[in-house]
Image (cartoon, rainbow over the protein chains, first blue to last red):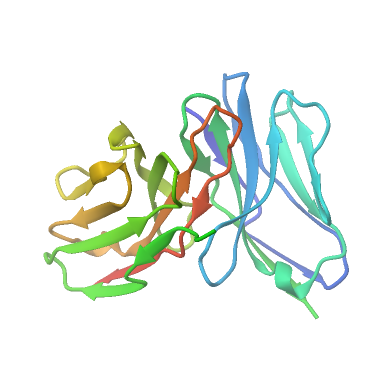
Amino acid sequence: AQTVTQSQPEMSVQEAETVTLSCTYDTSENNYYLFWYKQPPSRQMILVIRQEAYKQQNATENRFSVNFQKAAKSFSLKISDSQLGDTAMYFCAFLVQGAQKLVFGQGTRLTINP
Amino acid sequence: EAGVAQSPRYKIIEKRQSVAFWCNPISGHATLYWYQQILGQGPKLLIQFQNNGVVDDSQLPKDRFSAERLKGVDSTLKIQPAKLEDSAVYLCASSLAWGIGDTEAFFGQGTRLTVV
């Protein structure tokens, strides 16, 4: 079974700072996808960034980037130039290619302070 | 493009009552998921449909929960009878299909259920 662990229940930074959220996962599979989702108070889960395990290059989406360490089974999210609108719950998620089951971590509550 | 629609947004019921949630996925999306998200936790998959067939319902409490996706489009999730521990947000998500290049699941806004 696949598991996803987020060890930081809460984080808080000042606006414009850089923040890194941690995620580790456990699997014996070789072909899989990793995701970071954002869930604001409105509850709607929004995809922030995704990474295919077969790609060595770390994914980047504007201010969001990941540090994917396949051997260490680590997948951290870096948010640069943080904005007040980044305040939300962030979930790391894992999907085995073909199995179609999306497994989530426990989440990290991120607060950006003005 | 319309997103995933869920209703109702909120529901309060007494324990032992029954309740139903409705989800209309994005048009053309073959895969539909129901997740349970208890306050302070990550979403837990309850059931996954591929068209109108069940792919995974291993974590669905089948003695009280049921779900269907008639005609492979919209879906309903039912709880009968409800327990206090069923209080949670129920999220519906859909995707074209995993494994063929599109790996993004789109989520609805969820239904917050409170059992008193």
